[in-house]
Length: 295
Ligand code: TA6
View (cartoon, helix red, strand yellow):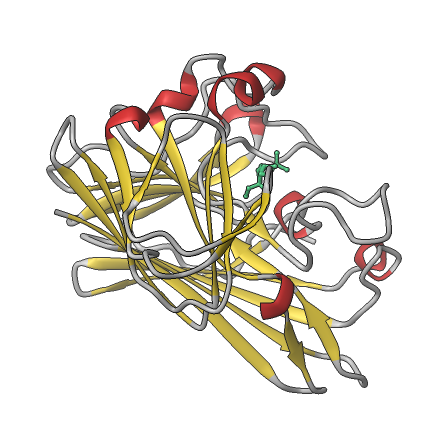
């Protein structure tokens, strides 16, 4: 399937080219911000608001090879989150981030640029651990804000359930001076130590942190005390949030993650996972979205 329909007209603010590893990439030059999106996984790998510094983080060690997800940016986790519950051979975080999405629309909207990517079921996906007919439509709006919206439609003749996450890696100057606020009062599951009671203070980082918050619509803020930058993550259609930093040992254990890179990133993930799994009747659709802004 061609990654871009030959009939697609691109505005002058959008260029299609080859990125790292020879992978197809769409580069966006809006007056209010720039961005890059690899067609592999419809993977946002960069977003910088005009006059600002990069907000999306990518590892210097990321691989750009078939079958290997990019490390950093905004991986789309679909139709399951983390390990598949029953199939140990299934890829972590689902197959969507490993698939080639099709760029079907590129247009200017005021000072913003809008890209729309589509992924539908394939013979490979139907043979996977999730044998369903679906359409996923991902709208990336680039400007002074970055807005990501994933709409999934059940194209099957039976009800379908799935997990989803916009697994966003945000750039910070120093994780040890960073806090994530907005989840106070919400209990969570620490993937390392199990269910934990709600905390009354923002999340701070002094060790590997991997927290799943369920049943929360909360907007979160990432405050980087060393630069004073505040990134706001506002979400719609999402009941779960994951906060992750691998810290020292896990960073060292990942070949596509530099040993000291953990200090420069934090994942704030906009999800519907675990108890917040989505179920759609035939023909039904659901949209999850996240909007990032910087002050
Ligand atoms: O979102 C947190 C998490 O589930 C962590 O446990 C860690 O595995 C991370 O995702 C990255 O997963 P990946 O499959 O991209 O290496």
